[in-house]
Image (cartoon, rainbow, N blue to C red; front, side, top):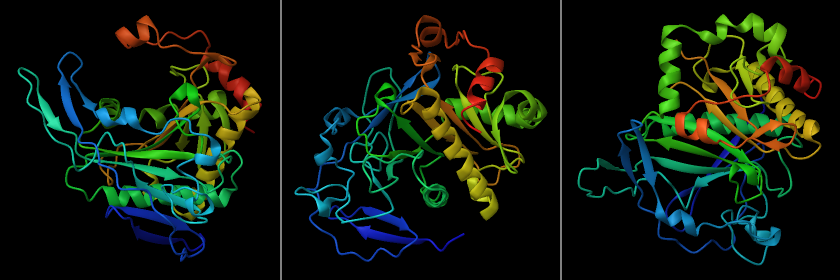
Length: 349
């Protein structure tokens, strides 16, 4: 692995902007954004679903679909206005989300008969590139490996915050998935609780490693791409027509356990999935990507994997979460995983 440099730049609001790269970042900063008053989110307990809902009213004021020339994630020193990154260039940048759903300012509220808590934790933005029009599909493997290193770094750093119970890097791509900025970026949520989906998943792995159990079937029937260390497959229990998981062949709790060779293989798998989706639709495919890692960094049962959900039901027709999915949590599928894996395999080899 190439040497990776990490620069911690203290912003004018006393929060850290972190620059990662293969070249040491020593550039002097330009004009910074004005200091904004951070949100003070809170959580309310939904007893019917046994889950927390977080409220951050200030999020409605966040930047949404600005013109390219006013993108807040571009290098600000090249423009006539300040951005989140006040430099002429960078490789990968990480900074706190100004419109966070979880932060250290979270405050509780008093509501009669409703359980509430401060929405503590962290929300970070990860900007993949200074190039406004780039995506993972166009990036070289070194840049994707750098992104993986950034995820590992943030797992190791954020776990040290007292009120953080779970860390999830994710990416929303495309307006269909709620994106409000087109510049290539993802996010990292550090939750003050273990999210319900992860809690159930961890319980399942504690009973048995269901991924190792079906590994042979994934290799033979459901795969869309595979290399020495990873299988990329449509899970036989997929909830979306073209859902894909990236699964390590051996059980590991998270990417922090990968060696250099495994990081290389992981980067290849990620690139194959995103570029394959784009070839399949002949355009930039919308998707939600999330890293499912163990809540405990030393868990011997959890099997790390990455899940991709394109909101599609057939070709480019949208999958709408309607009555059964939204009201009952029961997904209705009209494309068999055996069929969609064969279709995607043609585009992800």
